[in-house]
Length: 483
Ligand SMILES: *Cc1c(COP(=O)(O)O)cnc(C)c1O
Image (cartoon, rainbow, N blue to C red; front, side, top):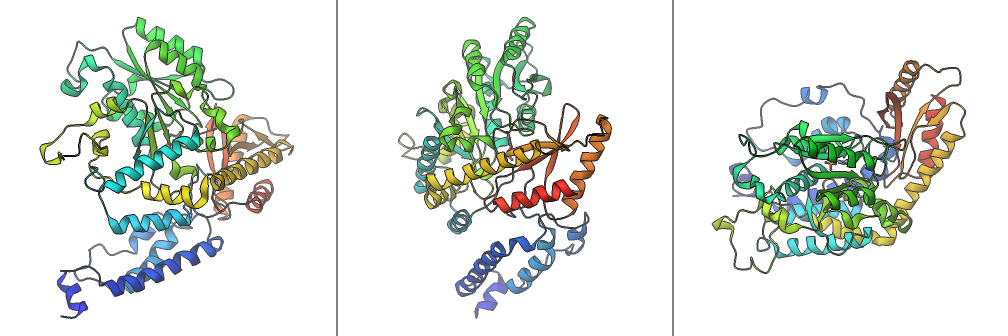
């Protein structure tokens, strides 16, 4: 049988020689892609359903050649790609990939280990412990925080809420659940009006229900008002609610505002509530000494989430979760099935015990590659440059008579809108800015996103791409101010 026959009978993997040849070609393709990335428009110009219509409804019965598959990848898939790595991608919190991250992902896929237990790949568990300790030091978290990697911040925060609930041990949620129990009070979690929607999703998933989340008002800089938090907790206790958790956000999604962690933490300490700090995007900035202030009071937190896949050049996904109470997290999730017991259990970390999923990708490998390749200084320099560029952009907005800044700029996101002197009707301004954003994005030269602040439509520019340089931000401003 030659190699071809083996493929057709389906009893073997792609022959190694073929893998080698394709692998070299793919790396060349990726290198060229990065070299020429600016020849693409950031957003594809495509109608919904268009990609699907070009793909067959039935799967192929016989295997196809890699040439045929790759040719369709270029012809059908690439035209429907939004280029997150493009230097003019300045929407949402843009997350970009990096060379060391991509290469590590490739190795991780090749090894295909499952890091559920220490035994199922000792290096994966121990590298996760070491890299998370590195990141903890880089961001200035206290030593007593213990780390685990989940896929996304949404999942990290859900685990935080589950641990906060498990902390109410005497209510036996683990054994008895939440439904049909008249003897338990209704649980309440607190977060600012600007907290991320993943907190709401976590509350829904855990059976607490949306009525179990109380949104605390914000001040004129979009930060949680801590005395409003105190007031809400006291009022709820009086009315029979059981407060159990507070989520403070460091870098909110709309404006990147920073909740006062220390003040909130002091309230949590006094009220005996779990404090979770959602710093998915903003947290990475603390790698720079002058930004360490964002975590002032972090010693009051029970858990924190930061996403290297947002602002540390890590291919999606990788979310770092830290807690000072890993034993409570473990109590919430470990079961100890007989077939998963190993003789090393008393000496090692089995990460499957600290979360929902059993199977775990080898994510720490890319974190290790990235931190080593760029070094702490390399990461600091890149983050500092993004902060500088955002500040510069904010200055241009401030000094233009027909634009206004709509929120402070603690990180690298600037919230602004066009406000020509002769227009003062809010509806008219909203319509004008929605149209402006639409035209910018349609140009294909720049991708920005929008939000609403107190009913006002606001445009956001996020400068955190690895390939975004001063010239790109200047061109962006040219385009915005001349549409
Ligand atoms: C982006 C973001 C999230 C969600 O992150 P995922 O990793 O996509 O789930 C949660 N909270 C904040 C503050 C964010 O910026």
